[in-house]
Image (cartoon, rainbow, N blue to C red; front, side):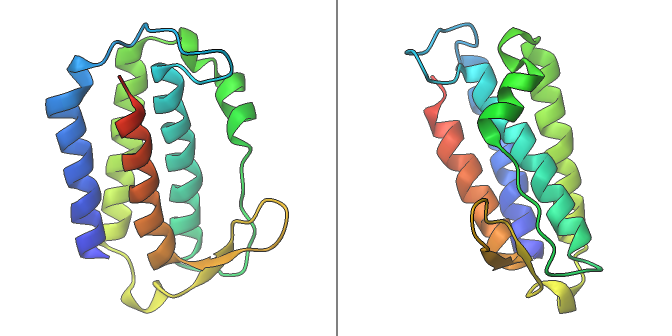
Length: 144
């Protein structure tokens, strides 16, 4: 998990230092698509839900924890939020995830929780952590 934490730290630093200032945060997307602010907001929501998974898996397993991404983005009004606040929140929650993963109990990385929305889908903490980074990178590439 230490390497996974380093990988996440690198993604955070790279985005904030080399890419965030190049993005047009006020652009309007095609109908039915998220704005750039909403994409970052979605990543904040994903960070919050995954942080809870990582923490809870240190002491329990088999629990179900899901979220409804479109509803969460809409309810939090990221489209109209200040981008500096959104980016700071994204950074801070992800730095907390890095801290959790850096210190993850080695004997708990294969613990599973259910993150399936409509049917059970049990995944290990190791899988969820790697998938979380891939998910983040996918969405960061969408920003223009």
